[in-house]
Length: 406
Image (cartoon, rainbow, N blue to C red; front, side, top):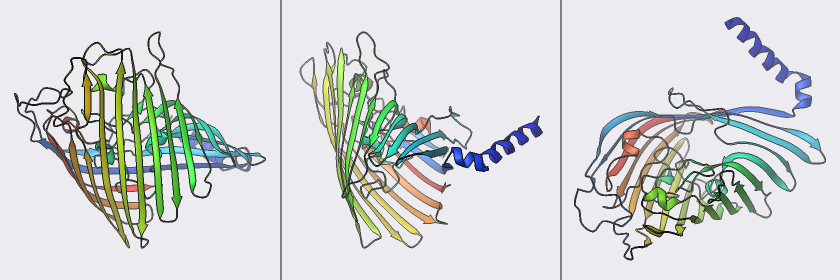
């Protein structure tokens, strides 16, 4: 049986490499990223039971921390297949199927669970259907505004940016499922990516209301406008979630018949002397429930970050500072306080390019939550540290890893 499988694999490889295969499919590429690190994480300083002046949205303080532990994180490692077919007249069919590659043996997932699509591309840009990162999330990719740490793993900027706190992490938006984060991959997506004109480009996406019920019409709209010209990058991004009930995710007691949650992002970056990139990013998240009879009806918070990436030969030095404000809220009962809902994050890193496709790296990150807050590290991390511990605790991680692109 094993030999039969080997013969089948050779036959498939031969078909793809044959002239007939080349005529039917202009270009097929196998690609991926393996990014694995060994990390130590912990969470201390939780707010004690009975602490006065807690925020209305905050869970009750427990004083619970998470002790130091080790973990192996596969980050956003993936393997994918993509290609295109020339249809003539400047029109092309484009496709991609991408899947998580959890080389640590955990969380095996279905094929196509990452960015996957089918569409048409030409001088007009690209239109596609699929499961894809929203423009709000993808707006910083490949720009001078991008996260110096690659917008991924426990050191990614989604720990503060795109999260309202409350132990919310970036992930996948699914129509009909409550969601409070804004750096997501959206299912059932219809998207348009424009070409670039004089440095300007745009992305627009709609995630269909497949989860619609008699009382709920969940859907997502997302857009970003980019300007990239030489060393300068500027962007504006907007995303709206209808009936995703982000407030209900934050506080189970918040009710409502409908909701509208939105995110705004404005950023700029500049590359100095060809080897040092500095960036600034501001964000506002706004959550509103309609028809609320109990609990919080709205919550709004601002956040910002500064980032620096310095490249010196094969060496890369990374630095980022993020801060989320306490914000403001309203409550059916009247008084609503956001005291202590803010947080700060410091992230340091060093990378060494072993080749054009392989990098070894070190990192350290720490989130300092105020007494009512529970911001947490994003993708990866030991489960007992990134979720669960009491409000006010401060997660941190130190690690070493290797990243290879193919």
